[in-house]
Amino acid sequence: MYLSKRTYVKRWDHQKTERQHEVIVNRGGKPRGDIDSSRISEVIEEVMYWRKANHIHKWFVDNVQDGVDDCKEHWVSEGKLQELLNICEKVLESKNSDLLPPSDGFFFGGTEIDDYYYIEVADTIKALTHELYLVRENKSSGDFYYQSSW
Image (cartoon, rainbow, N blue to C red; front, top):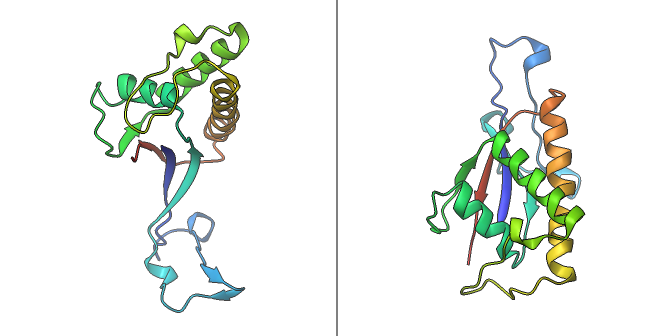
């Protein structure tokens, strides 16, 4: 299960220099000859990866995917990310897993409320706090997407 951020970086000649992006892809310290950096229009970053964190996945299915668990990519608003962050903070503070209940199913892992459950909540807090800070401070732009894969 992944949360990614897509940032548009297409370089246009008509843009002022301070607005232009330059993306260089190196391998072994040398530019890759098979990638034309002038054609790169989007950068995709992996913001968060969850492994068998069925409680986080269930939240995305219920709150972003209209209840449909389809393994497709779904756009996630900053408001929804803030909502998930708030819930995770409450869960960690109160140890109340009813706010973020586990879900069973194929490839979902266990449904126990154990250390692993809380580690995933804490990791989610850390990642979302960082990303939302960057957005609020206008240090980052981009669109967030969630996708599960089984």
